[in-house]
Each structure stands twice: as C-alpha cells, then as structure tokens.
Amino acid sequence: MSRVCQVTGKKRLTGNSVSHSNRKTKRAQHPNLVKKRIYIPEEGRTITVRLSARALRTMNKKGAKAVLQEHGIQL
Image 1 (spheres, one colour):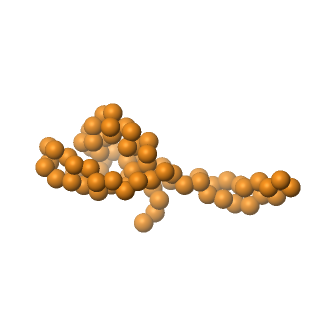
Image 2 (image 1 turned 180 degrees about the vertical axis):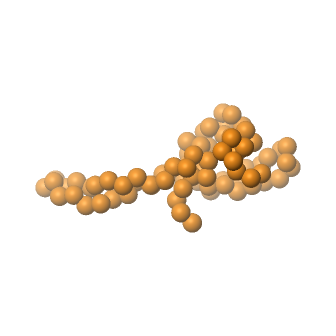
C-alpha cells in the first residue's frame, strides 16, 4: 500500500540530503500517516482509513462523516 493520505492526498516529498561537504543525495520526506478505525454513528458501523495527522485534526473539528463525504470516500 502506498503512503498516501486517503483524505488529503498527501504523499511523500523528495529532496536532497546535503552533507557538510555540500554533497547531495536524494531523500524522501514521508507524511505522518496513521491507520485509524472511525465509528460513524449515522451508519452504525466502523470504517478503517489511512489518514495524515492533519486530516485527523480536521475530522475532530468538522466531524468524521462531513470530512469523508467532502473527499469522496465511500461510507
């Protein structure tokens, strides 16, 4: 499974590691992803999604069902 947030679509960034001698080698910065089980009371069931920490904060603020529907995730 790729490291992509199912809500925000965040994925890895690429860049360079720069040493003291200014040599550059490729590196990746991965998003802070969490596999989370979320209970949807309107549906009466639980779904599992892979979220970034930022998306989880948004869900706590707006509500899980609203955020998932806004981003087109099947409930």
